[in-house]
Length: 156
Image (cartoon, rainbow, N blue to C red):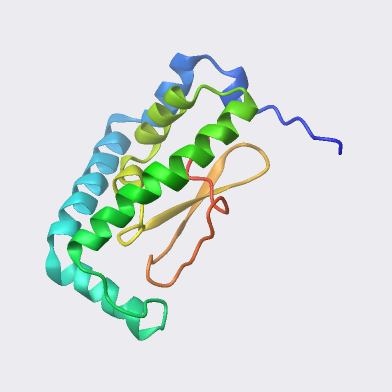
């Protein structure tokens, strides 16, 4: 089987340039950190989480509404046993340093790393063929993504 080689900024730009692009302007970085704070505090806001879970349950996506500890355990397990190993394998195959990639992902959108289940995601970066990303509004209760179907970074 023939493989296609794609050259992206992640493979050609200097690490410093990639860091600066991922962080954005001071205003953009402040907005990103505010989204991260909202995402982290949303888990503690029982009413907001209950509303999201109730919507998923009403739509038949959840058979039962999980407890808080089930959500935490599920998020940790997703990171440990699915997201991280699959991403590490992919980036190793691409010749991209996985640790540096995670730094870029955090700078690009810190909230994406704070909500692995996606209950409070408000933005879904969509990888396009040019190696850049565009962002569309989304509601985690109405969007389903299969593992690997959405790249969370423009630095893939």
